[in-house]
Amino acid sequence: MKKEINQLKKEIENILNDNKALEVKSINLKDKTSIADFMIIASGNSSRHIQALSETLLDELKKRGISNCRLEGQSSNDWKLIDAMDIIVHIFHPEKRKFYDLERMWSELIPKERLTI
Image (cartoon, rainbow, N blue to C red; front, side, top):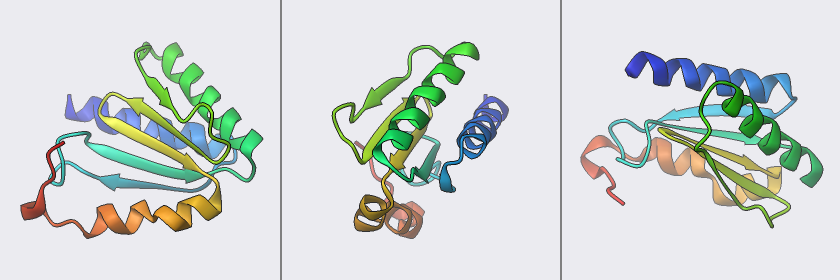
């Protein structure tokens, strides 16, 4: 299973990069929370780009047999979340990404502070 998750993470990163997502970063969450193994954060350069990235990612995951992904933030112009099983993908407008600063928050958590939601 671990190999499958790592492979899926690489595929998601490739899909985002191939579709011109900006600053694609992955954070390993395995020892930090039980909600997911990885968080992938990317930016789009416009609300239209963010929407297209989220739709493309969902379509590509479906083609790979992962059809039970959920999309959050459908009404938002500057943020989308895709729950891809053990991987959470955030796609932000750059300003919102800087405001929420998820990279810093999740990177700084140390294992003994493991969060359970």
